[in-house]
Length: 492
Image (cartoon, rainbow, N blue to C red; front, top):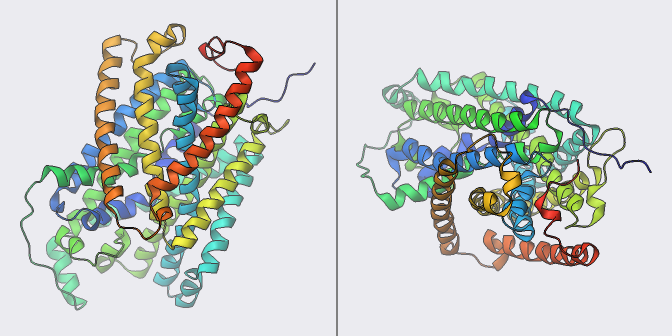
């Protein structure tokens, strides 16, 4: 008998790190540090400290991911980590939550890209083209084309994937550096003068005392910017020297992205007073290019807006790789229908899982098109990833007791005290952020239930969990005691 086709270990440290960076850095950095002034009124001058606080639970989750990846370097990392550290069903809940959130947000991200492309066109004098790009039909066609275009790139194999992703990452950083240079070279006095020359006025300075509830709420909003490094763990079945490369790529990604985020945000607020952003209409969407516009030539504004568009485009291939490997891992482990484990015999890509993930991303596009907004998809992703990160920290704490043989393979956080400190702190911080986010979600006014992202997430989770339970019962009926199966890693 011939062995069934398997994934190929072809991704090195650069490809893995690019996967993490491009999955993390999207339009959030061009929008969220400024939109938070409107989403959480009163945060005022405390945005950078709130950003730093938001990084704490994300960093603890990154440490948990890195440690667990060093012990279990297989495709579908978060599923394996929770299934071996906690229970197979909790592993599915953690990763299905992630799959739903990321798949929907892939569509939401694709749907907003035409807005930034229109901004580039408008800055260069192409008003008619910009107006066309902003029509609902054009946005829908472009979004679907981007989703399925990157599904095709992923289907072609890791070489095509890496050749696409790495150059996009470099362009994104180069265009992001324009924001940092422009912002660092200007100040509030220069902004006031430029605004006055354009016929505008700067709001008067006002006090913004520190308020802990406002601070935590703002940090919970900004937390969404740190989601994405987990894509590296999902590619664990395709990494060269995975026990070393996966933890390094996760921590390198987090460090590079955090430094970029803080430099970018600090540069914009160095040039633009927070009072100006806070005084914008409640339904506005402040962006880095819009805020720095008084200092920019049309070419400069087009460059910054193009940077945001490239950052968004970067999100798509890495997230598609991530979510497809989750489906592949479920099927290979026998807790999901077997068709999702199909691998192309020569390109070594999980083609059925990629197509299914593209289909779910299409749902995200259609939801965004119906709501005329991408924020609902982002809210679903944040809930999903908070649940996922929380279970990863619990798995870090439980793995040595539940599966000591696998825990012995850890090359990070080998000391029990270090694991306990990271796991307990992660559970505490992530529980706080989840509670704050759910409270904000439940307080929002909606006209129909499906406008509430938490409700949509819950319905999809219920359907997915039912499918899993059916497959899990079939697995138990085939193998009897399933505990031994989930005490080891699945075959490559």
